[in-house]
Structures are given as C-alpha cells and as structure tokens.
Length: 402
Image (cartoon, rainbow, N blue to C red):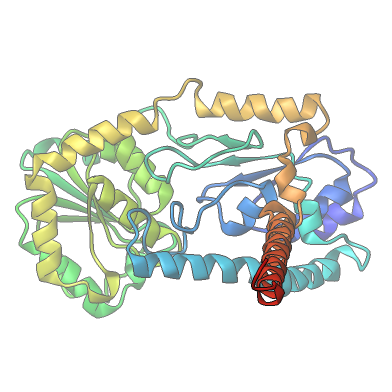
C-alpha cells in the first residue's frame, strides 16, 4: 500500500476497483483521482445499501447477519427493525469516526470522510440473484453478476473420477469452505461427523485441510479424505447426491448450478441467513453447528437424499438463478468499460443516496403536515367553542318576550 502511495504521481489510473467490505481502502479513489467501482461477493450490508441509496426494508429484506430471511415472526420483525436502526446509527456515530481515524493514519490527515467518498462510488458489482437473496427494488448503480465465478466443466482427476464412477449408491460431498476449516474443528464435532459418516451407505468425500490426522480418531472405510477437491466439477458428477456445506454464497451458487441438494452447517456471518433462505426455499436442510450431533447428521443426510423433492426444487432454483440475459462476466466487463467511457457514472446515482435522513423518510414533511393539521384542528376547536359560548350567551340574555 505504501508503494502505491509513494508512486501515486508516477502512474495514471483510469479506474479503481475495490472490495466493498473494506471502506478504509476507498481513500485510494482520491489518491488515484479516478472513478471507483465496488465489488462484493456477499449480500449487500446495511452500509452498502446506505451508500447506494437502495431501498432496504428491515422486515421484507433482513440484514445478512441475522439468522432469518423470509416470513418473519413478530419477534423476528422487532429484532430486525431494532438491528437495522442500531446498525445505521452505529455506522454514523461509531464506525465512521473509527474508519476515518484509521484511514487518516495511513493516507494523511486531510483524507476525506469515508462515507463522503463512498457516496461517489460509480456502481457496485454484486453477487445477487433471485434465489439466494430476497427481492428488493434496485437502482442502476447496482449491477448483478451472480455466478461470475462458475467455470466451464473440466475433466476430473482420473483417480477421483474412478471413485465417483464406482460409487453407484451415491456420494456425499463434505466441505466447510476456506474460512471454516474441518481440520480445526473441535474434537467432539469431528468425532460426531466421522461417526455419522460410518453409518451411511454412501461414499463420502471429506475435505480436510492437512495431512495431520492426529485429531482424527479413525477414518471410516467409506470416507475419502483429501486436502482439496475440484468442487465445481465434483458437484457436477451425477453420483453426487448431497453437498454438506457451511453455507457460503459461492458454495450455494455452485450447488444450485450443479443441481445438488444442500445440508448446511452454518457457523458465522451470512451463513445463517443463507441457510434459512435455502431451507425456506426447499433446497435442503440445516443443522445448528453448536448442537451438531451424530444422530441428527445421519438423519438429515438420509432425509435429503431419499426425498426426491429436494432434488426437484434445487434443479428448478438453479435454472432460475442462472437464467441470465447476458453472461455475468460479459455484463461486468461491459459496465466497467461503461464507467471508463464516461469517466464515472454519477448520472446513475440515486438522489436518495446523499439525502439527509429526515428528508429521505419525509420526517420534515410529516412534521409540517402534522403541525398544520394540529393548528387547523385547534383553530376549528377554538372557533367552535367561541360559537357555542356566543350562542349560549345570547340565549341567556334574550328577553322572554323576544
């Protein structure tokens, strides 16, 4: 980073692409003096929604860090609304000052406010599709490129292909991703998982990130342990019946693309949201990581594999998710070049993105109208009261013969 700052006057940059989750890096937009495009592989956070001026309803579209996604109960609606409000207030009054302090430590004391720079983002390329996320209104500055990481099918290694071909009874593929490493699981969890595998009639491919098996009591004969598997191509093999995953968005996309049902063991981040969304959609089942047990794992693996409805649902959802008008890579390239052609895309900015909170939610308008209504009601009441008092006065003072 320091090298980039030191050479800022030696190189002319036309465009700055930045991971949307790291706002401290936004300051490079001013360093490079060029348009900025955000990239995110996760669902949009509340902060990103604020920057783009998107409409995000706390009940119809809960945040990715909440463990529910659709059809919220009353308690969940209250929780989501409170979380949404606190997250926004925390962003302005707690997070922003800390981000600015950290940014100015490396970029200099005159570095602009992070949120101000973020509001100048030309657009965001985001991993969004109509299966893994809730439907929400979008603005032109958000470009959906779900499935951009999906690769054309490639031949499997010969030894792995042989294992899969010979597993006529079916294969369970177990991979908890790169952030949740199987090799670092607590001993009791690992024992429960391997013990469950030993009771299955299926072959199990188990991604285990190290050759050191000292933390493993024993490996069942139906389990193939390797440090790495070509995941997309494994999932495409017709004998793979189930994908046991931590619920990362890219892994779910790959399962949908390969039409393989899911058993999700969510651990943190957006995984809980993703798990709830997939279970609600009928794409599979989930297991609470903290309460993971051998019995539940065996039961749910068999249930998903033996019930053909999960396979049918995943096949349908996969067809919907990746029915693109334009391939996502081509779409991303076109929009990047669009920003380059026009030296930014500020004309696509939604005006609500930079509008003060009280104006965006019409609080000043409602206060004014409320005041007008209150004054009008008060005036009508006072006039009516005066008329009534006047009539009573006239009635009391009227002579009997009148």
